[in-house]
Image (cartoon, rainbow, N blue to C red; front, side, top):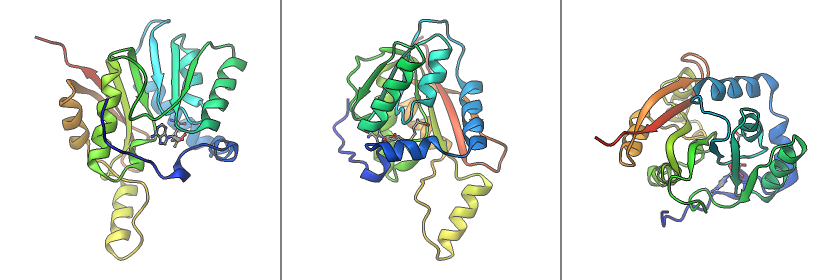
Length: 217
Ligand SMILES: C[S@@+](CC[C@H](N)C(=O)[O-])C[C@H]1O[C@@H](n2cnc3c(N)ncnc32)[C@H](O)[C@@H]1O
């Protein structure tokens, strides 16, 4: 666990039913492309393995993980997100553990999960120390795999946003991370990069990096 104070701004936390509903209404093509990215990057694991969806938001990854036959735990700081995911998993017949809490201070023991997925959160944090604290906590609770999505600056979207900011426009509120920064932070936790998948060529900024614990020699 880390001691960094990381109070996220309230509008990013899905604590009310309206913000959860708004997230569920995102464009179907975008949703499908993001879920396809998760499906092709996630390692193949046997049924019954413990996996964590953090943060779960409206529960779309939890549901997908449940359908793979895994034992799903999920967490989110937003009370409405947690309630929604809990109800969704129960409705679909999955016995999932859904916990309200801060991802920077999770309640599980070290190496509790075989795989941990953190989708669409890292880019909310502008500060590199906060991003490092997040990946450290994700790595702590994983025995083998950690998947983290991030926004690369090396995409047409990333370059366009950077240029607009440098030319006097507003700075985009989503933050970009270099792959090298993520690889270095995960290396300090004993993980190496297995694969870094893109949502779609060099146009999209969203990437999903799969790290695995480096075997002890
Ligand atoms: C953009 S949503 C992504 C949700 C989900 N991973 C998905 O892709 O559908 C980000 C989520 O992070 C949650 N969140 C923000 N800060 C958090 C924190 N410190 N701990 C746990 N959850 C947090 C928000 O409540 C929100 O549900």
